[in-house]
Length: 226
Image (cartoon, rainbow, N blue to C red; front, side):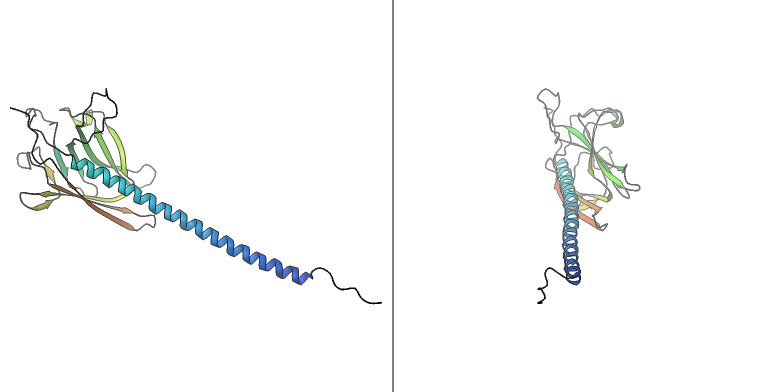
């Protein structure tokens, strides 16, 4: 009697084929996982860069529209237009009048005049982190600023430091403080340029520094008195 030919696969062949398939699946999964991790990291960097660009653009626009006015009641302790900046160890405090307010409604009883203030605030979700905050007072007033309703926006989260420098076109020097409300300061004088340097942490926890400048257009105080 002649033996029939062997049909199908042996156990060893099945095991070898299964091992090869498992290796191919593992390699494919690792490739897909690495690609997904790279995509998430790239998106974090892009999100951080977008946040930086938007913040710097907003700050530059505010400074470019800064102005002073001679139509003031000098007897008031809180002038309606000012440019006051105090140096600080991490985030400087600054308050200035600007023509950069965006009127959103035709009957809002508002103009382009507003008062902007930059300040720091502790991040509510990350211990030890500091956010850079923009405070906008809708209408200039002689009332104390803390008594007036304002809008608050977060410019940047988790800021390491903010440095503001002001170019004095009379002395041709950069200064880290400015005050138009004091007679011994820069009364009636605006800096011609403002240099903004911001340091933040990137998604890789490395320091990332961005620097830009704003040119203040209205150098002379507004005066409508005949």
